[in-house]
Amino acid sequence: MKVYLAILVFCMSHFISIAQFNEKISYQAVIRNIEGEILVKSPVGVKIAIIYQDINGSRVYEETHALVTNENGLVTLQIGAGDVLLGNFSTIEWSNGPFYLETQMDLSGGTNYSITGLTELLSVPYALYAKTAGSVQSTNSNYQNKADIISLENNRNINVNDVYNTIECTQTASLSLISNFDSMAIGEIINLEAHNGAVLSIQAMEGVSLNYTEGGRATFISNTGTVRFGILRKIAENSYIVSGQ
Image (cartoon, rainbow, N blue to C red):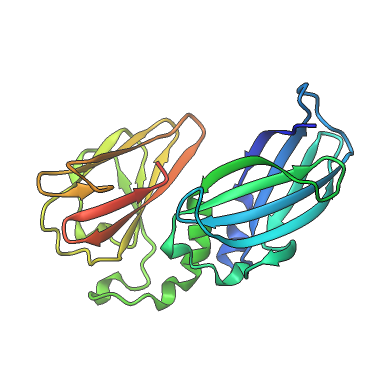
């Protein structure tokens, strides 16, 4: 019987435990059958895989869970706390992403799994990556141990204060990547957030590449009551990549 995942949530309420080095990702799903009926108090076998680089990339971690849905058809688990089949969750190098999450399920509660979901992991694992932020070394000591929230409400150029901080876009605005921005070293990052209906655009200017396209553009479109997350990383002189859009 084919399974539908009606809801997939990385719970915001668990971000605090991640920041406290719990090293787990909360996952919830409402389980429905092919007719769209919620499966109440039913056994479910779940297999989770973390895949590196692209959807056909190497598997760096796998685990299984034996669960029972509640009266609302909901299952809840923590990725990193299952029965491990492959790898070590605590040693995944989240900073070397992208990574993808594959979910498989067996409605009999067994191990005859079928793939039910494949999605790119975005902001949540990078909260795990942030646990090492205190040991990050930069070519400029001003970047060490920074975790400021910088509001973006109007179009502007990237600047030195953005590096290793979080740009919080609450009104539609654009951040321009200017040529020869030497205040950001190769490998350094900027966290990106678009809030509550705002649209955040990252625009590469003349002579700058974004996601391997000169003059490229990345857009984060948030809906009312939601937040879209991403990361901007410098990979070479005048070259950047963005994940999470």
